[in-house]
Image (cartoon, rainbow, N blue to C red; front, top):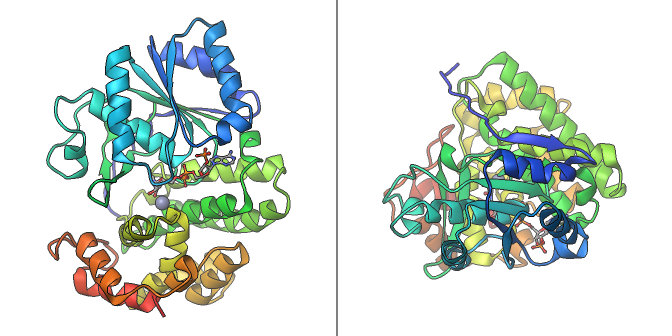
Length: 382
Ligand code: NZQ
Ligand code: ZN
């Protein structure tokens, strides 16, 4: 096993009555004026935002609002949020939504606490030392951003999607009511299931391990692969929604990676797909994973054997995962993702960006430079 440092400070309020804890949690974490940040309208339509506004007013907690976060959240809205918060003297950001809203909130929090351009953190020109705190009311289990140290932002002016990792952005709290996920369309539910699986699989494919972490990871993967198809049949099943929601947080808060070395190569390759084609992150992961696995499996055949035995009931991993993705309506190749083959020029551009001009390698299970990235994109483009 590899030495590790496990830090998961986000406080979790989980269940049907969890939203009622919002005022006390804001008070506990010192909020005097709140930015309520949200996406394109689902939280308005479900009645969640109206309920939260009423709670804030009833408890005399001042707030301003900024909606309009899009999937793969954009830097231009982050700048707008920073300006608004400075003008309004906001000292706490409440993200109401999924990974895109949470990451936009985290980036606003970074920017507010920094004198320079917040993109510096995503461009590796500066390292964040502090951030204005963020709290979350989660509406889609997928990204795990509600407990993670990660923030992923798209620079819409430059066409670049970049991540920044730091403990200072970890949310102070997350409120998770599984009933709020009943309204998720089947496609978004399947996207979430995919990202949850991938966050554990990106950690599981490691050359060092710990038995306890393997057992947690394998149990999580089996449980989510069982619950995912069932919840698509029964979208209002509270127990299934709750299982998936909690799995989403556990999958990306570090728990399933203790003692190993996280790979995250598929994530890096995927970020170029969602930037190039505007597709959902999770669907992009499903389009790539089987080809990544095919390409790297000789690095450690025993690890793939263990995955097969303990997660897939003995089935061969590449075909079993392809069948699983198809069974929940996810694509399992680039043509299935975008409805056509990627052009040679697009693949070259994605490999150039992912490798930062050929100078940057991704992945740990097998390190991938520009040549290997091209190989995997081309395999996935058949
Ligand atoms: O915008 P609204 O109208 O709210 O609709 C959203 C959005 O269109 C909808 N939705 C959310 N909750 C809903 C709902 N629709 C009906 N009922 C509900 N209860 O779902 C759509 C997708 O939302 P989004 O937040 O984009 O999804 P997700 O949580 O998958 O986040 C994706 C983003 O997270 C990043 C991805 O790269 C992508 O930008 N990631 C962030 C990570 C992190 N910070 O730790 C890790 C991940 O690997 C990932 O990279
Ligand atoms: Zn992800």
